[in-house]
Image (cartoon, rainbow, N blue to C red):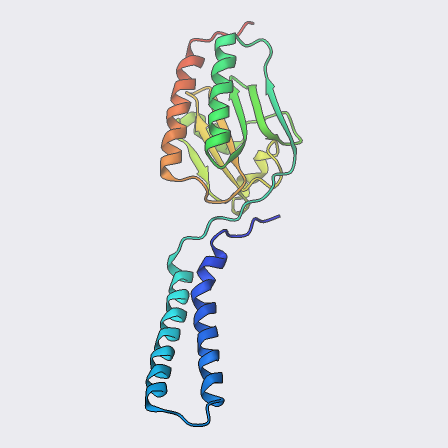
Length: 217
């Protein structure tokens, strides 16, 4: 279910007040038996003020940014860590995922390294198996992140069947050449440039930790 824009009522207030003022002025003019010079001047001023309010309201509809519509992701909340990871890596993954879930639009996180799913946290999708599709493989090959601002617009969304089905936006962030961190958001176009830079910094820290980890076997 989409979340209503928090500023919707505020943007409509000038239009509502201006329209109400114009109606009241018209009613007052129609019910006044004898129009005085002072009242005529007041009516003209009132009409101008009402028109200005309506115009301001219309401009606000165009220039004020609207918050992206958010949804409640379909799935169960969970926190899954590979049990055989060293404690240092577990702590680092838990710390990084907690920061992202509490300080951004991210609602689901998956960390994959050397074809192993090390972490699933947040709202978990129905498929626990992560198969690296074309987009994820490109991210690891180029070691450059890809931000799908509105997932439903991309044909490649079918490879993200391990995310909640109504995920709105996705960032695939490389963790070196053998890993990737996949972030799912509950609103399209919800990550800012500052968010992307911050996510890159966290990913770099995780990459350094993963580089010193040698999985058994």
